[in-house]
Length: 125
Ligand code: HEM
Image (spheres, protein in one colour):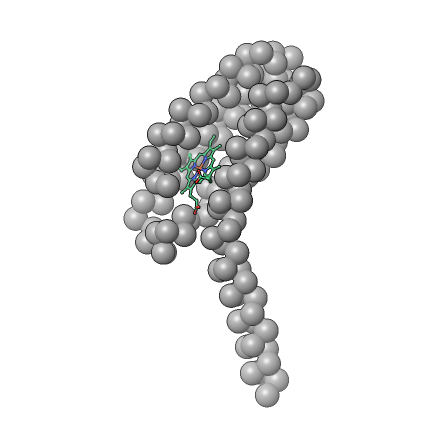
C-alpha cells in the first residue's frame, strides 16, 4: 500500500513536470520578448543589465526545452539549440558593451535580435 501511495505521488510530480513543459517554453519566450523591450527603453546601464540578465536566463531555459510540437522527436534539437546560443551570444556581447558604459552601442547590438528571432521562428516555431 505504501509503495502504491509513493507511486501515486511520484506520478503526480512527473505529470506536472511534463504538463508544465509546454507552458514553459512559450512563457520563457514571452519573458525574452518583454525583457528585450524593457532593455531597449532602459535609461541607465543598470536597468539595461537587469533586463539582459533576465533575458539571458530565459534564453538559457528555452535552450534546454524541446518545443512541445515535436512531441519528443529530437532530430532538430541541435539546430534549435544553436539558434538560441546565437541569441545568447548577441545578448552577452550587448551586456559587455553596457558594462563599458556604452549604452547606445549595447542597444544597437540587441537590434540584431529581431532578425534572428524571425529567422529561427521560421525554422522551428
Ligand atoms: C530575441 C529572440 C526571441 C524572442 C524575443 C522570441 C519570442 C517568442 C515569443 C513571444 C513566442 C510566443 C509567441 C509567438 O508564438 O510568437 C515565441 C515562440 C517560440 N519561439 Fe521564440 N523568440 C526568440 C528566439 C527564438 C529562437 C532563437 C528560437 C529557436 C531557435 C525560438 C523558438 C520558438 C518556438 C519553438 C516557439 C513556440 C513555443 C510554443 O508555443 O510551444 N525563438 N518566441
